[in-house]
Image 1 (cartoon, rainbow, N blue to C red):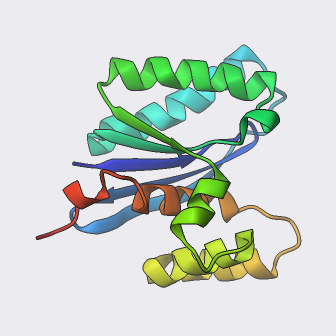
Image 2: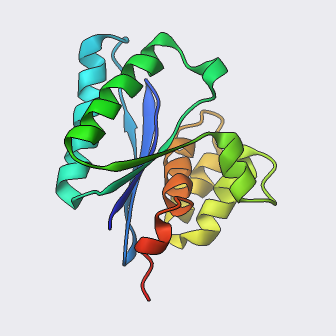
Length: 160
């Protein structure tokens, strides 16, 4: 089983792929154009690339709380549900609050990022850069790593 972790956004998204070998891909995706239905299609197409390339069976999606879901995010979620259904992916949704609940010692985003770096040392350079940078960029990638790692399907991809 392969898990695609996504921290969605209309300007920046994070993705992470976890399989039996561990974390195999992680990155931050940028979408700079103004919001439109075409931009939503570009974002969905970006995620579909990873679903096909890695034969993803589970998607763990970090979403904003309902109170922060804009029209653009709701449109994007609708298109994503159609994409995941088309590819037969199981989907799990989590908010940042739920991620913090899965990491009891993490009280803020900084501690979540540090936890992700402890779990997967290969992301330390990007997390370190993020923690020292005023303009946040890679936090979405770290959230995607965490949401994939803390997926309830995670045991299915852990080596025995």
